[in-house]
View 1 (cartoon, helix red, strand yellow):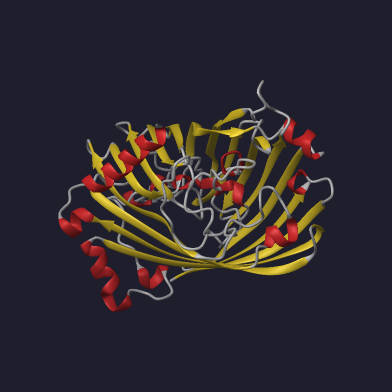
View 2 (spheres, helix red, strand yellow; view 1 turned 60 degrees about the horizontal axis):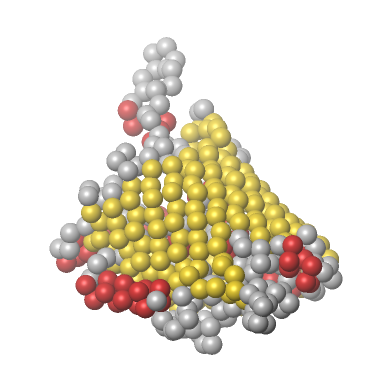
Length: 450
C-alpha cells in the first residue's frame, strides 16, 4: 500500500510540475555574481558564462584526484588512485521562463580508479568519500523547486540525494573520510537486503518539503524517497525503478539555526576611521546549528540471526529505523583576522541493532580556518568517529566491539580554483573484523574547479 501511494505521489508531482528543491544551498537573490576568471581554471568562456548566469543558468565543473596508500594493516599494503568528476547546472526558472519562485538543479558525476577501501583497507566507514562500488557515470540529482510564502516553504520532487540536506554539518565538509557527509548509522546497508538510502553516488525519486521560520532561526524538513535507489542488478548508469516491494524511506529533521546579530565595531585607535564595509560580521564564517532527525523504512527485513524465527518457522521481520543529533559551533574568531578561527562539531546517530552491523555511530572534531599567518583560505581539521557494533552482529560474527576512525587533514587553497589536501588516517579494528590489523593510510587530494 505504501509503495502504491509513493508511486501515485511521485508521478502526480512530476506530471503536475510541482517543483523540486535545491541541493546543498538554494540559489537566492543575495548571492553575488561569481568571478569566473578568478574562481575557475577555464574562466568566463569569453563572456558566455556571465551571459548564461544573467539568464538564470549557472554551470559548475569540478574534478578530484586522490592518491592513497595503505602503509600498514588492513587487507594489504599498496597505493591506488581514485578520480571523481562532476558537472552541475543550477537554473533560476523565474529568470529563464518566468516561472515564479521556481528553480531546477541537475548533478551528473563519474568515478574512475581503484576501490581502495575494498581492495586495501576493508574498513566499515570507508577511507575516501569519492569511492563508489562501481565505476560509472550517473545522475544523482535532477529536480525542480517551487517556493511559497516568501521562500519560507519549498517543495521538492525528482531525483534527489538526502545527504544534500539531511544530517548535514558544514564544518565536516573538509574531511575526506565518508562519515562526515552522511553518517554511517544511516548510510550502512541492511544486512541481507537491497534497501539503501538515496545518498552519494545514487539518487532516488523523492518528495521533500521544507519550512523555514520567519527570521530563519528554525527549520523543519521531511523527505519520502524510493526505498531502493537505482537498480541493484545493474549499477552502471542512471536507473529509475519503482518495483513492488521496494518500499520507501522517510526522514524528518528539525533544526535550530540562530541568525547572527550584527556585532559592534571594534574600538578604533585615536584618530582611526572605520568604514562600514569593514564590519566584522561581513567578513568571517560562522557556524551555529543544532538539529535532530528521525528516519525509517516502510519495509520490514529479516533478522540478521537465521535462528530468529516465529512459531511456524518463518524469519522474524524487523523495522529499520533510527534517530540522530548534530551540533556545530564557531568556537572563536581571531580578533584582527575575522576570516580566521576555530569551529567544532559533534554528531550521534542510532540504527536498529537486529538488522544492522552498527547500532550507533558518534563523531566529533575541530577545524581551523586560516591556521597559519598568510594562509587565510586554508583549512586544517581533525576528527574521530566511533562505530559501535550491534550485540547481535558481534555474537554472530565473532566481531570486535567497534571500529574507530581518525583523520587529520589540511586543505591548502593554492589558487581559488586549485586545492591540495594531504590526509593521514588511522583505522582501528577495520569492519570490526578480528582478522584485520589496525591500519595507517596516507594520501593526497587534488581538486580543480573548471
